[in-house]
Length: 524
Image (cartoon, rainbow, N blue to C red; front, side, top):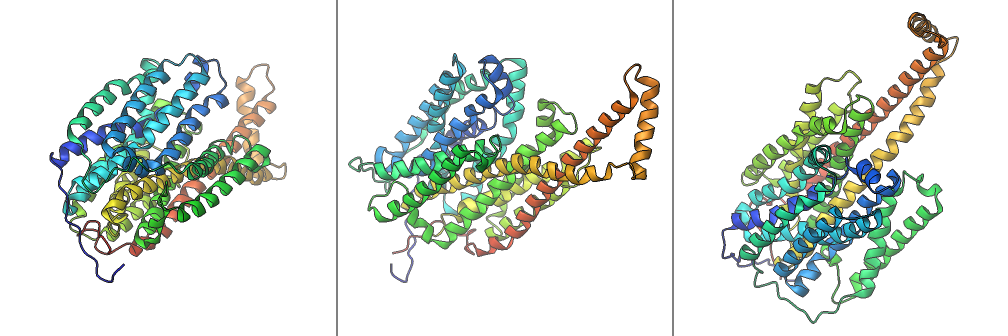
C-alpha cells in the first residue's frame, strides 16, 4: 500500500440507475417483509398444523438461521457464479419456497420450506445494496440508500400489519402465496436491467472453503437458535442451550482464524482492518438492537397491558412507516449537503427521544401519545441507516463492496435478533423483580393497601352475589400489582434503549469526514 490514494474510474451501467434500483428493491422489500409478517400469524399456523405455539416458533427460527448463514457468503457466491445469476437464483428460490410454505401439509414440511426460503432471501439484501452503490454515482448514493432504507426499515414495520390483515381476512397461507406475483415481477425486472460490473471477475474455478463454511454454519446457526429459544428454556439453565452457546463461540473463533489464514476466504474478514467500516458496522449493529427491541416490545406492551388486538397494535405502530418514508427522503437529500457523521448523530438523537417517550408510557396512554414517538422513531432510523450504508464502503476498494455489504447486513440482523431476545428476557425478569418489590407494600400495616382493599371489597360485596367479596378483592389487587410490575419493566427496557442511543452519538464522529462527497476509494 502506497501513501497516495487514487480514485477509481467509475463504471456506469447501461440502464437508468433508478430502474435498476426499483428492480432489485422489489425483491428485497418482499424478503425483509417476510422476517416479521408471520409474527402475528404463529398461533394460527400452530392451530392449522396441529402444533404447539412453542413448536411453531421454529417457523421463524429456521428462516433466520439459514438467512444468517447465507448473508456473509454472498460476495463469494457472486464472484463464483456471477452476481446477476446469483440474484436471479435467490429470487427464484425465495419465490418457489414461498409457494411450498403456503402449501405445506404439516409443520415439518413448513420448516424445511422456510429453510430454503431463508437461504434464498439471505443474499437479496447485500446484493441489492451492492448493486445500488455501484450503479449510482457517488454524489447520488445517498438518494439510492434512501430507497434501500425504505426496504429494510419500512418493511419490518408493515409486516405485522399486513400479516394480521391477510390472516384475519384470508388465511395464514396467503402470507406466503402473496410472494408469488411479486417474485415473478422481480425476476423479470432484474433479468432485463441488472448487469455485472467489469471488475467483478467471475472465477468459477474457486473451490468452496468447506472448513470455513462449516465454522460459519456452526457459529451463526447455534447463535440464532440460542437467541430465539433462550428465554423459552431459561437460557443457560438448559444444558442444550449451553451447548449452543459454546459451539457458537467455538465456531466464531475457528472461523476468524480460518478466514484470516486462507488465501481465498469464504468471508473476507480482512476488511475489518478498515476503521471506518468497523465503526459503521458497530453502529448499524446498535441500530438493529434498538429498532427490533422497540418493534417487538411495543406491540407486546399494547396487547398485554392496553388490551389491543394484534391487528390494532400493528396499526398503532404503523405511523413509524410514515416517519421512515419521510426520514429516508430527507436524509437522502441531506447527505449531499451535510456531513454524514452529523446526520448519523442526529438520527441517534431522534431514536433516543422516541425511546425515552415510550419509556414513560402509562396504562392510560392515548393513541396520539403512541403515534408521535413512533413517527419520531421512524424518522430517526433512516437518518442513521442511510449515511452508515455509504460510510461503510467509502474507504474500501470497489471490489470489496460485495463483501462489505454482506457483513454490514449480517451484523444488523444479529443486532435485531439480540434486541428481540433482550425484550423477551428482560420484560419477564424485570417484571418479576418489580413484583417482588411491590408485593412488600401489600401488607396489613400499610394504610393505603387497607383502604384500597376495603373499598374494592365493599363495592364487590354489593355486586358479586355468592362469591366472597374478599377473595375477589385480592384478585383485583393482584391483577393491578402484575400490571404495574409489567409496566415498570417495559418502561425500563425502553429507557435503556434510549441511553444506548445517547452513548452511540459520539461514535458517529469516528466515521470518515467526507462521506457526503466521495465514493469508494482504492488504496494502492
